[in-house]
Image (cartoon, rainbow, N blue to C red; front, side):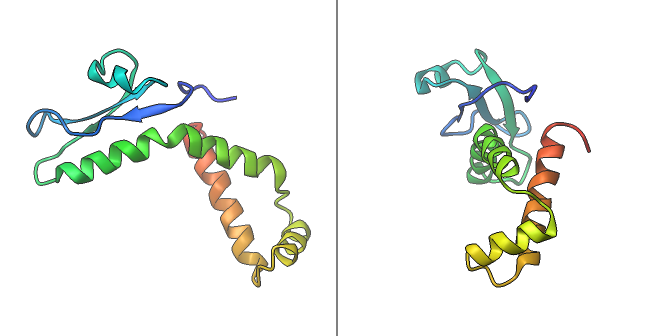
Length: 121
């Protein structure tokens, strides 16, 4: 069970303000209309640093907004994939993946990302 605000999260389409106070809000909402008042349900603010483009900040906001869905996907993978070497070998063979170590590395990365999201690292 996560402690973070449940998704979905929505990112603003455009940055607001001028650096160093500008940025894009990320709002926890199913309703895109709520983005017009980001103080209601704002979960994150992607700040636009001096020299950073608006497009880069908007991309950061969209990445942040995808976090709940990405976490759900990683947890689903974690629940179905047994990370032991024999299981990785069998799964790699079944999926026609030539290198089971690549699958094991991807599984370790998924677990590390989940641990980071949970504040465990």
